[in-house]
Image 1 (tube, rainbow, N blue to C red):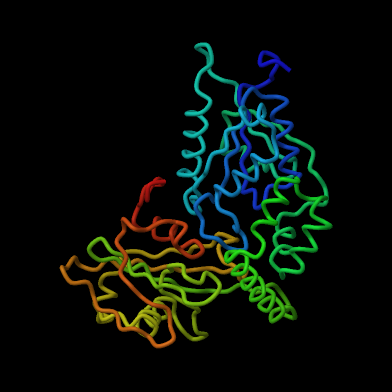
Image 2: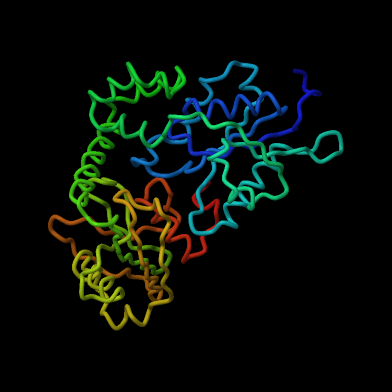
Length: 358
């Protein structure tokens, strides 16, 4: 098919590709048949590794490239996309700008752009966000589940090897299988297997509950003089990542009281409670359904803006606990923070979407 025969100047495919599977490949191949250029926007591009987001953007980009020949790759633009979990307008603007900058104008006319996806995956919700683009649906490839693929890969090394040597050919392109074989046994893979074991234990503990559990937690966003208070996690999940101070709410405890208790007991923040209460500038419920590894977990976050001072408040180490520290705002990066904590901070402080050099 010559460029003049293509129905679209550009087709856009949005996904997380964790990992790229044969269902994704079917959509991209269809896009290549109908468009001069295909833009693949890879979501969760700067998230820390987790069971939901095991592979970084550059790894997923290489996996996707391995599925196509030189001519096809020349027509593919694979672009990272930063999540904006609690601000659809920021996310939509990022998508629009990336597509505009890549698609450009063709012979002094506006390009014909479409949004392509599998019939079930291409939700009407996405279409309502991009009414200026046409919609193209591709029949869904049955029997492929990215979440099931990830679970098979992280249950154990033996299950990983068994899956990659037998069942993976029904789900994954050959180049992706090769990349996952290289990934197997790496430090990142071993840490994710540890997290999968914890998650399986968690699920078994709640298996007999009469309904799926919903957990309630609190987090503190404490800011002073261009620094935010964070802790370094010392255990899985998210071992080594930075996180907001917080934890579960006790049965007979109000949410703000739970947040202040966490700051007092876990972080030993040397700020009197009346001063903290007087510094409270906002609170919000963060409820993205996939925000936590343990399942449906709601987080009520409280924003404390302490008065600027040359001395940051002292933090007393807690034996056996996470290590607290003041982190300059300029050092915040999404891939160094646990779960959705970067986006919680972003929400209260109004950090731009390209914060941190993104």
